[in-house]
Image (cartoon, rainbow, N blue to C red; front, side, top):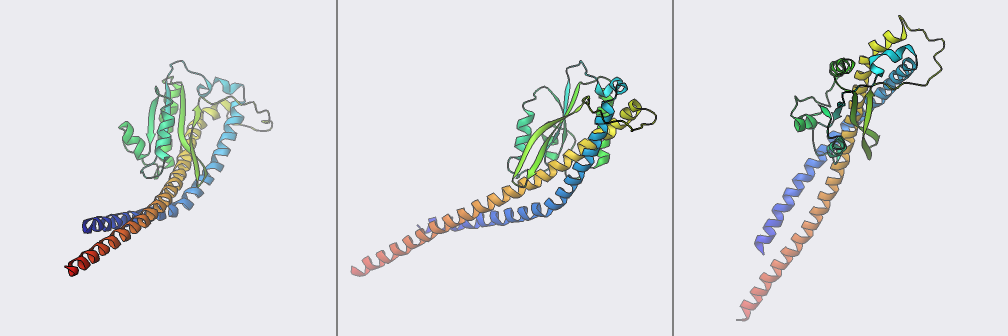
Length: 267
């Protein structure tokens, strides 16, 4: 019995240490949420303006000559996969990779340490990803698409619904979709719509990548905070149960010792 109480004390101490760790990780995630959300909301406004510009341009008949609106014939699809830099974020990373599994024959371009490690690529951090990084990536993808190297480009990222809800999805960005907008009257493009579209394509793809990375990062820190909150509650419950078991074992040991003493005195 004494050995049992000792084991329980060690277990309680171990779970208490884990509880302190989950609290610390939860506080770190909480401190990042506000900044991540601000970057995400600003990114959404920027993306809305970009998409409006592309819609206006793609509705023009001349722009149908652009390589960015043409369907290829190689049968090759590329997907940029945005995952996290760390684990312990609930199902955040697992959900991204589960969605990717629905596209088994695609070329993968990873962003985020977990994705880079999974596909054996050079590490690209999702937390510290910049517009310059996105511009370099977008330039390569736009060049390859225009040259017919692949047919379609998509991004798997995570949509931020709330602190408690995030969901992975695929956003297809190349080729551009022809728009049916008819409210372009009065808009003048220099030198012409086709030239502007071809030149803005790289910035649009870079902007799309940047915005989705920011939203994915906001989703990651929110998922980690919820995971640490849940882990903390489970650890507290486990400590309570272990403490109760320890008290019972200790009381049982004391009772046994008293019984032995009483029995011995009777002899």
